[in-house]
Amino acid sequence: MKTFWFVLTIIALIWYIFVTIFVSYKGVADIKGMLKRLSEQNKDKD
Amino acid sequence: MGNFNWLLDGSIVGVYLLLTMFAGLYVRKYVSKVDDFLVAGREMDVYLGIASLAATEFGIVTCMYTAQNGYKFGFAGATPGILMALAMLFVGLTGFVIKPLRDSGVVTIPQLIEKRFGPNIRWAAGVVIVLGGLLNMGVFLRIGGQFLVQVAGMNVGYLEITMTILLIGVAVYTILGGMLSVLITDFLQFIVMSFGLIAVTILILYTVGWDTLVATVETHHGAGGFNPFVHPEMGWQYVVFNGLLNLAAVLTWQTTIARVLAAKDSKTGQRIYTSTSFFFVCRFLIPGIWGIAALAVLGTSVPDSLDAMPMFLAKAVPMGLMGILIAAMLAADMSTDSSYMLTWASVIYNDILAPFRKGWSDKRGLLWNRFIVAGIGIFLLIYGLWFKLEGDLWTYLGLTGTIYLASISVLLVSACYWEKANSWGAVASIFVSAAIPLGFLIMEKIDVPSANKLAKDIGPYYSGIAAYICSALAMVVGSYLKPKGGLAE
Image (cartoon, rainbow over all chains, first blue to last red; front, side):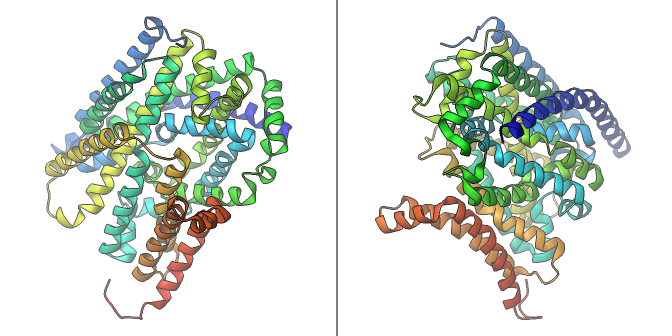
């Protein structure tokens, strides 16, 4: 069981570092896309 | 006094707060209708969804009780995180419940429930969800304040005023920008929070050491510190109860489901679940390690196990990193508070006020939503900060959570997959789900020795398992008892 928790901790840390960097990078594009679509919808409505 | 330096660490925290407020207020101009306010116009994509879900479901209160689990149970204390990750992965891969929920185009869970069980059950479900959710959230502010005051070494007398100012800041951008502000600030908060969590964990592993953590767990908990099935205070019933609790939470916890409903389609919602699932292992394991480190350094002399982790961090985290840690924890708390305020407001507006708001314009709807968020903020201040909680945090969260999780998950699964489910079954399920945990807690608290003994013999885990099983049985029995083609919904 000790090996299980050691491996899980290492995987959790590596996964978390990777996801933080990846999501930080890709999320910016998501935000830009979302705001652009909402802006277009609001213009159509006007 | 801890290692908090007002000039260096205070500046880091100040810059973070200014950036968040600016981002939250900037996007308010995109909000023109109720759908924009409540579900960001359903335009959220996968990566923003992952950041938002992770930030929302990790607050200071989460950090406190998961660290407490590490302190009290060792590595086995992270078991609920593993179970939640498995539940989320299963739901994400199969689309169980969340696919029909998102495809139906509803804004809240009770709205879907109405389609099967009628408007009265929708209203009742809305009341149960808001009651459970708000009472659950009621303690977040004080627990968050306790953490910050201890870690920063502030005067305890400043707890109320600090958290009041913080809540007002969060409320302002949530009221003006709704879900859009929540998503944008969640994104910033996810980055700051994750950076702080990772940096502090690496520091702890470097300074305390993995071997010391393992030896501490072995000394204080034995084999049970690594395996929940052999821990004297956990056992199979703890694992089964947490399995049911976490599956129900994944399916029905309104703040989690809100990300599926704001996703641009059901496939995006499923991808958000699948990709975020492993985060829930980190959510329990990382603060759990902080709790074990607190046990290694401070021992068992800490009067309240909930305080062990912040007491340890106040000494272990150096100047500079302390500012990042506090900014990270503020980020965690602010994202949780804003999402929770908005989510419960959405249920109040969408479901509880449903009978009264026919023909309302978007402008009027937006105004009402903003009033409701402000009202929830005031409730949190009065209930969560100025009212002192009696009893322990776990019991409180367990009570308020299980009251609605069992019945609403049964109602939701039945609404999606069981044709014979009807309003009688729904009423019976809601009643049983609330009666069992409440009955257990009353037996535990009242001044009757025989009732106290019975509650002790049953234990919270068996009681919790019974709530889920009996709630499902009540749905089946109630549905079959209703006369065919008889009474109207």
